[in-house]
Structures are given as structure tokens and as C-alpha cells.
Image (cartoon, rainbow, N blue to C red; front, side, top):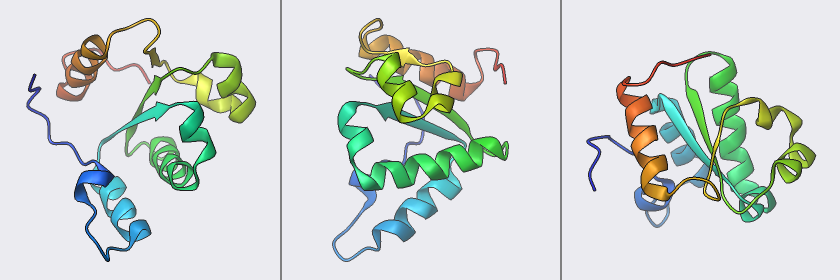
Length: 117
């Protein structure tokens, strides 16, 4: 199902020999929205934390909007990792289908839904 959005996904964009940090920084710098899929695996990895730091920094500066998705993780686990992450309204794959989440993300990005900050 196409949503008509331009999406930068690090795994699709990175080529052999690329600087991981530079490519991630470039992708983050060019984006207006940061979809973050928080899972136990995400919290254990170094590069995902680097990406999250960039998204949070841009969100605080008002230059990007973070759209968090919780996948097979509880609110308590997120609070233990970073209490400030639970401040953002998130969608959970335990409550919503992937299609429902994707549809809502597309709607927010296109501006179809009121954006509360």
C-alpha cells in the first residue's frame, strides 16, 4: 500500500564504504519527521541510540517531529530507559495494526491530522 511519502531508511540508503555516521546525520538533517520504532532490540543497539539522539535534538529545536512506535515493549521498560520518551504520544503494535499505524503516520506527515505540540 503506497502512501505517497518520501522515506529515508538507513538500511536502504547505505552503500558499501559509506560513513555510517555521516549518512545517518545527512538523513536526519533532511527529514521533517522521525519515526522511531522502540523495541528491546532498539534500546540495546548503539547506532539506534545515536539516531534517537539526533531525532530528539531536532524535535527539541522544533525542526522535526518524532513519531514513536512501541513494538513488543512496555511503558515501564521505556520509562526505565528514558523517562522523557513516554512524554510523546506513541502507537503500540500491541494495540494497533501495522496498517493502522502506517495510515496514521501518513496522515500526520501530510497534515491531515491536527498536530498538537
